[in-house]
Length: 178
Ligand code: AMP
Image 1 (cartoon, protein in one colour):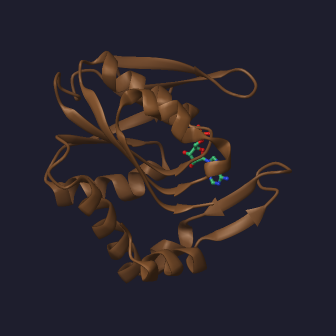
Image 2 (spheres, rainbow, N blue to C red):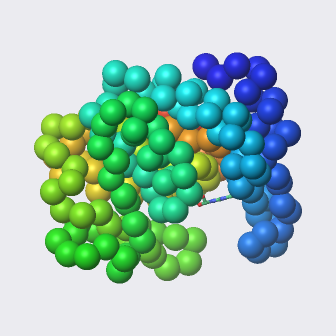
Image 3 (cartoon, protein in one colour):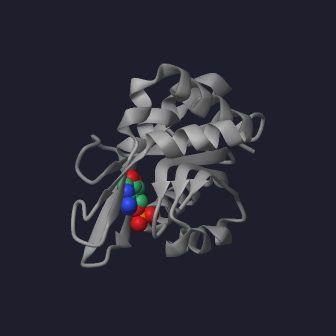
């Protein structure tokens, strides 16, 4: 879907930082994209083209999912809903607990912002193991909406995150794959 030029530009722009934040992780730093407004605009256009006419609302995952998610929602002229880490949103909220490598985490959204029957795009900057995104999708479905699409700038395909998301019968898109 993305042009070869866009993929190349992103590959050249996103920085790989080895062993951050812990040894063994290849951290993908997307912050240099924001130094190049034209590139940011092209990324948004690409993500918007993927979702045009297909969703009624966009859910972004804290916090890098907001950097592109809000712009996608504005361009699509649909609502944007924050999915946040536990304890940051005021009540009433809906929560979903999920497992991490060690222990567990909780994500939350304001009750009533996602409407029953809506077709939802879940967006984040990067798909790794898929644990966070899967929990976000469960949170959406708890509210009677359907996740019809997932989009990411980056998919770390070796971690098989897509496998956790396939059960939602949704379209999955990553501009870049590593
Ligand atoms: P996961 O639940 O494993 O799919 O992790 C996804 C979340 O962790 C995303 O919100 C990413 O921003 C962040 N993340 C995981 N791995 C990386 C990585 N190698 N580089 C940058 N961010 C990462």
